[in-house]
Length: 399
Ligand code: ADP
Image 1 (cartoon, rainbow, N blue to C red):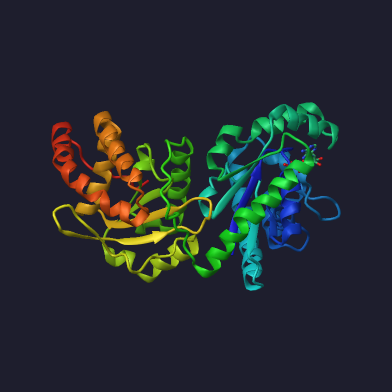
Image 2: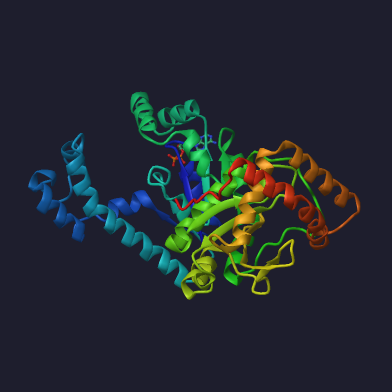
């Protein structure tokens, strides 16, 4: 099942989007609803709250008195932590149950409607994060005029949430909702058809997305860095300690004139880890199926540099994941080459000229990769000289 995280500031139109996704066939799990469910009469969490906070936070009918509880935890971090220690496990468990049930029922797309996705740093848990984006003044207006909220409350609620920049940083998809509701719905329908449905199909069948064979090189796209960060966060979440290093490599990492492919490198302690059942299951679940026939790079000196290779399933972004042993020559070279290109303008210009030369020869992608090899071989000495001169060492990024 494709697992989507949906978020947006209060009044942005998130509920409108989640309703539409449900109409289109997604199973939506609403975080606010679950948070209320777990403290309904008869729920185990309720008795734990009574034991910790006493009868004062209950109504005479025995239901939770939310305003009273709010007053107790407001401004008291310890009390709030205790409350969350009770409610959060119940919420996570019920959320997981709902998605597990949807999976058993063969649901293709599960949507977690999660207002606090950014605040709780959950973006890496999802295959895709969708953010509804609406200008603050417009949100205030809608909350006041359509939901009857006092303006002051609308503003203070907005101020208490993550800001637009923080939400945009985790957004794989930004749904603009400054226009008419029909425009928003049309955007959701297009997203469903063009991206979510094929992504879900690819995930279910572990069908990788390959970059097109025709060569389309592009000028650097300011989106590449953010895309890579989000993808690395997903890999970090899926692989945990199996991924010792995680880096954006290749031309899109420089960034420079390139095929729009995200090359990512996962550094493992040993390739045995990359072949382990846990690693492979985590990559499959994350939507990064392995290409079994690719097991090495051939180095410039003819040496064989072993690796494992996975591709992504998102039809919108071709993703190549190179898995190499930390400290191995292939691992080191990928980082060195990137850093040299970042630092050396003349090197970048030469590499670009070589790409242009090959593109005008009308090569398709596999031949292009091979045709670049002599240039790499010739540049190798220059790159190593740069590494020595600058004292370059491979950055270790295990965070
Ligand atoms: P959220 O769930 O993000 O808090 P809602 O989906 O409830 O936001 O939207 C807030 C209010 O604005 C609702 O009354 C909704 O019907 C209305 N709304 C949503 N999108 C638009 C739009 N594009 N134009 C006008 N009103 C809208």
